[in-house]
Image 1 (cartoon, helix red, strand yellow):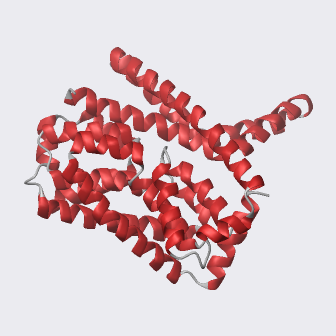
Image 2 (cartoon, helix red, strand yellow):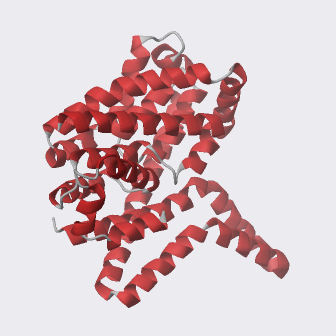
Length: 112
Length: 230
């Protein structure tokens, strides 16, 4: 997670559009999904950030992947979730949230 | 919004909230740990040392991130100060958010009888349960991990597990305050698609997850929730 934070700080708009631009396709989506699952950023920061990424040349689908997995999948909070709901349920919930994020991304990809 | 500051901000915010978050799940144990430390300080220095390492271990992420911020300060003073300020404001927000939530949950636990929960979210609540979960999740504010204890309370009150999972899903994606943000930054279309796609899917997957849990899994979930609030 420290890695994710530092990466985000270092990346320039140029690299952003190369990594998660609209041409980055599926690779960019997977990258965004991973970043979103790991990072822990409050939503009221995530959306302005997503908009800024869009301006910097990121694609809608990639941002959708990032934003949705950011909110629904919590890799960092997984231990806490396991404490409350047990391993099986916590992992299942996160996995399903990841799938849902992916589906949402695909719909955005098609429609926007 | 400037891109550079945008990216920088997010990084520091994530650093700040991660360290805070890892500190807070164990608020109660951490307190008792400190109390213990005071007691042992008078008796044995050996156990003080052990307590200290245990404490250091518990807050290791917070400590690491504190060092990262300090390092950032020395490499780039302005960024370091910004990181510190954001971390402080994050902590404040966190501290403002957690006590009310826990007080509210305590009251809910004590005052609202189990039967009410069963009526609105129980096994036989049907559509009412779905709507209740939708309402509870949408009306909320705060990050998802605040929803975990609330979900545990719902489970303790014998809510149907699928509805509790649905509640978590709704909480994560369609909180009303957050939707306003999404609407203004990402546009109406993006927001509408997210709602249209995610809500039904969360409901579907909630039901699937509940189905895949064995009777023992469910039993242990209810037991776990029970012990969480005793």
